[in-house]
Length: 403
Image (cartoon, rainbow, N blue to C red; front, side, top):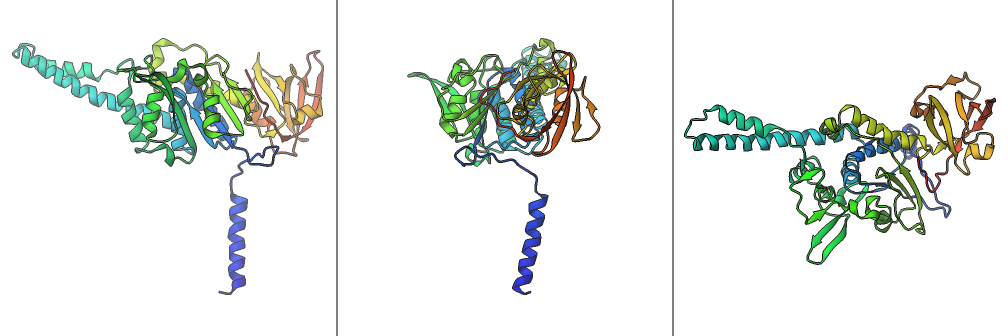
């Protein structure tokens, strides 16, 4: 084959790869350097399940996460994501908890049978062979608290004994070490990931057999939402922090890094269904999931191309909470905070009524490619209804967003 034919084949293959590839947005800083985005996941016990929804929102909107720092439950969810970024995160979490439940049954049934045999022997046979069955049944019941050692083993099996250094997404977590010198914070960004995560999650409210050698870092205000630790380890240009603690993060605001903090309210949990929720099922699990997902979707954190407005649901309406400075609608000037969006049209297309629509679905209609037009039918605070055409553009994420 001649050189020219080789060249033609190469160009054809290259073109197919170029135009069939999935679009991933890459943002540059003011200095022209490629942005390094770090995702920070707070502590929060069962409330940390909201991190699953938040991560999925980022994945759905093709936000490239370069590194992740999570503590306690944030470390658990973050490690599940970093070890398999393309996997279904809900199913991956459910798989972990199902493996834990199976391991619990296997270990406790064995312990129950031994207990039953011992009782039978001690009774001289008077208790009967049903004692073995009874002991096995008692042993098979799931305990109210998780076993930290067992959790570490199951996590390690799921991760195939993987080390942090082997991940495609940089990962770090922290935990407190209690020794003769006192309690010191240790940041782990290398070594066995299951061990590091289980130590970070070692909370006596969640796990039993919790010795005080390694402790959940949540009692440290800075480590509860580890923005400062993430900056020290990764030196990113932007940090997206998902905060489920109910308190604003504490960090050095003079750091040369953009900080986007999203406060997520997970509401109150039904104590009767806590075990089901922890296993990744039931109403409270999915309510918590969508609390994180909606918070991320609605606040513009994911809309790298769109109009640049923070939205929320109120009384069935999609309400404008905030106009992001420098965004398309900020430049256009007509859409304002407190406006209610009634309908959305793509260019000169037929308007779609969004009254009563979940905010995550409304956002999908409003968001779109840079340069395309969206027309919003809006009800102003004075009850006047207006049509506002906006040309979508790149949305610049502000330094702090709360909802």
